[in-house]
Length: 286
Image 1: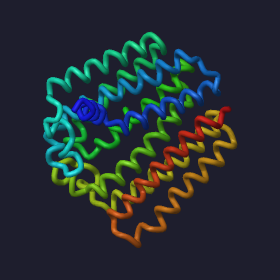
Image 2: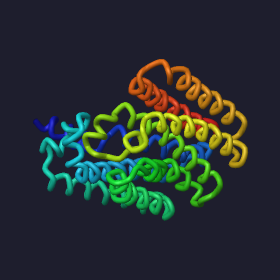
Image 3: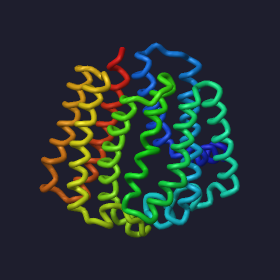
Image 4: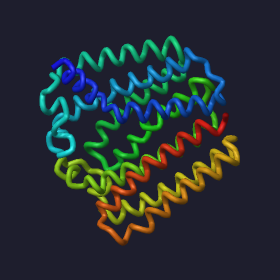
């Protein structure tokens, strides 16, 4: 019984999102430091980021209860099914937020804290509004989605520079292709919940064109990081290969299989692309 309850609280934080973004923060930090690690700062960054994202996800789950009840993939989440009470969820997100802020304040720097707070507010409230009422919700959501990588970088550099600009462009372009693919293969869910994601508002063919646009944008943003922000030649070659195969594998199937099947493949490929990007970013400065 206790294990089941703990598992429910664990799932409420959307652990997949927590792990992915924490890894992103770590990659940004290792890239910035060239592996000259300051242990206490790294601990503050990793655990502060993880707890902050967990709190934001719990808050998001609370706000999304009416939507989650309408979507097949979310209807069995902890709050729509009352496995966890709303009161308990509010206390939980508050405790997570408090611990996150303490770690970021005491072990990182003010700029990292500001990035984290902006990400929290923009994810929970600004993105939360736009995804309900605007087809631009996905684009708005890429801002908090990019924050962990930026936080990792500025936790060491303590400045906003050209590298931050290109890292932001890379993350925005990757997320747009990734989440538009999800929106296509989960189209019925979004229609059922009356969410105006791009495929619902503008149609699947138009969305596919934008997916390819963002894939190409991703490639050029990585070129920019290499040429103008000192990522280096090795990074450039690796990311050109990764970007090429992402586009090549997607173009080759777009007219041969059902849209939903194609979109699911693009989504899976995008996960590998993101892992490849993060690993390359983290290791290229060793």
